[in-house]
Length: 302
Image (cartoon, rainbow, N blue to C red; front, side, top):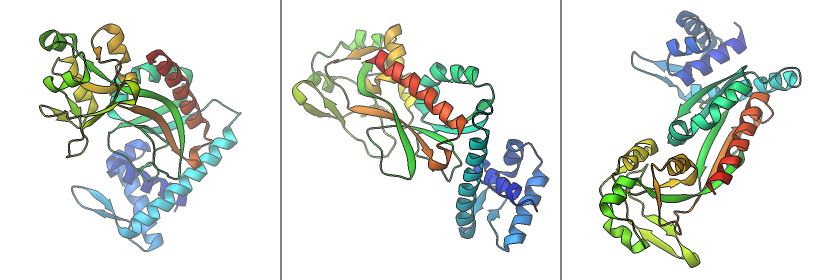
């Protein structure tokens, strides 16, 4: 048994969620993947995966073993990357987790340039507003948009910070009028992003350090930012977005900023990656590219 090949097979099966998808990822066959997993389980004399016709799941022993296997493979890949560093252009596949709004609104502004600059790097993007397990999910890099980050074992690099601003479509404002002061918002339809069941009021920050709590989402609240963006563009109401997300819409006149002296707090863009990936040229190249892009974009948005 090729031990490292078996570990890679286990990781691919868990990450992809099926033998077929894992085989495609590793450019091999379903039967080869099944054989490597079986040999690994026979070698360990423990069952790692529970399989049925509908889904795969790690056993309790499998979860512990998978975690250690991922860490070992990360260290091996990082060692390979360090050995190749300086000898060749960054190369290989980079798995990246991004929020849906980045995938839908911001990707076109940084992805083509990166792929053109690094033709030997391939990106595998997963768009999800839920927090993913970066290490356990086999991701090389995750982008986060948040006020701050909790302590973790991941390397965090701040890429940009910008306010959340109130915006609406010209058609909505033509029908309902432009709010002149924050109290006017109570007479408007306020569309909210709520990834959890409970509604959270907006905390709006204004002149002279004023903070006002505003109820939003009575008519519409969604758990996916692209859907909220589409609703605002359709003239359904006023909502909050990071300035970076809507700067092209503002420039093109598709959206208009409402109450420009007020904002919904600051959000930071972070790049997160495991320590084992910190020196990988392909990851470093992507993080540096993102940092340069968001530094320029946040300057333009400001």
